[in-house]
Length: 340
Image 1 (spheres, rainbow, N blue to C red):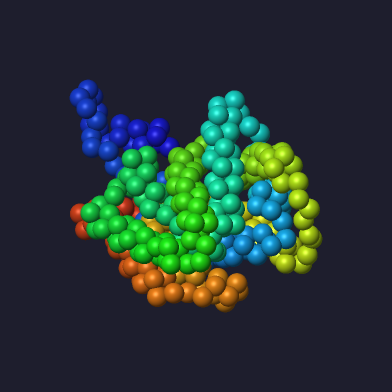
Image 2 (cartoon, rainbow, N blue to C red):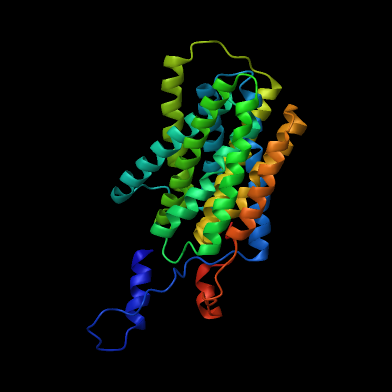
């Protein structure tokens, strides 16, 4: 990706120019979201908001780490089928080992903290706190993704959304068993940061590593790591039920398969911070789903925080008028909305 930008800079310099290159342009591999892409991202984000509900339901029948490795196994099967269908190159080159291992460690720790956080807290709280990944994506993309600038109006939107997240999470202080909920909230918040960092790191690698290879490697390493850790720390028996099966199908097929592949493809073709800004709607949809499915009663603090998050997400999608739209000839290099 960086070499493409460098080539564009060299091409923009007059022939024979030996001085500094012309000012950098935005990364032409990515562009702001259009309407179709925005609707699709919202749909996938709504599915993502149900992930915490599926995990919470599954924890009634299997411990957190065991649930994690079963989810990885199901997700690996889905991703492998996708990779074979698309003819993805799954060969790992020498230069890819280090970034793939780094991503796998990010994912394993993030999923572990997420599952443990949901164990001690509620699905609604976990959805809200994990979605802080969108804030971290926007902040980190400003420094690591070419052209994805954190403009003042978008920064204001992110801060408003973050205020909403604080209001929502403060609800744990009023709930019974507040100490456990605070522990769960902290674990979920750390998981949200790791998810945001991993998404930005993945976006930087997508120009050179196939998404299917990236996800399959992470799922494979995650499966092995979770099996070992679960065998050591979770000797208790578990119960196989249709509820557990449904939880695993949702986590493995809908989220680890369709959800991850969709989001990685969207991050490849569009600015990651713009994609993640729409994900800030997940607290509202997650709270509603937790209420409808798990009977978690929403409080006034949850709804107040939800409004702040929604408003902040809208502002985070705004673009400064000084940024000129890309010419149609340059837009073609992005490859369309989603090549799936």
